[in-house]
Amino acid sequence: MPRFLVEVSHEPDAMACVRVLEAFLRSGSHFLTRADWGCKDGDHKAWMIVEVADKDDARNIVPSEFRLQTRVVGLHAFTVQEVAEMRRHHGAT
Image 1: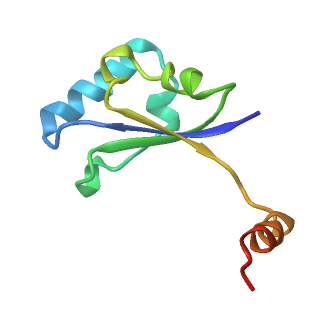
Image 2: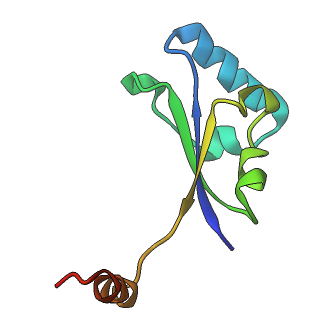
């Protein structure tokens, strides 16, 4: 199944942190407990890696009021064979 990094940003103030945490808690989303949050280090974002069918499914994990500021990135772990193929394809030595 495809893997995606889900990143949710919010405003850099304490009340914004409380609002986003409460929204995730109210939604019953597992995002709250499965996510890594950067707020305590001054980076007001949360990240989670999920395995779902597509980007839309990944975005839909997030409560609706935060979906517009959510970034979803498809992830891929390269194999040694894929790296060799890319080098051949692009003429790298």
